Image (cartoon, rainbow, N blue to C red):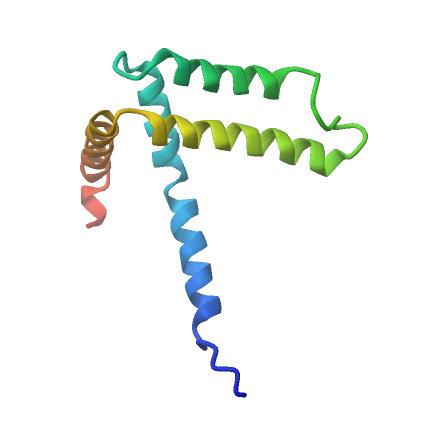
Length: 114
């Protein structure tokens, strides 16, 4: 049996990760816009604010001083999952409107580089 792997799979993975990293500021802008929008349900906003309070609070499921790396990683994962759920569970038309607005802002800001 031969192992037919794509010779460009490592490069594809690196490009995929670079694309994700490139869009982090846009995702943060989208999350902030959704938190300010009145059309987004209150319980979703409460979920994000609860995650922020959890990350700031000194009490954790996995204490940072016992397992330093894992404790901080757990805080980051909880924050990211709450932001993702904010975007996924918000009304699609609200999210689409904010995505278009952010895209237009980026086009205006970076029109010199195009």
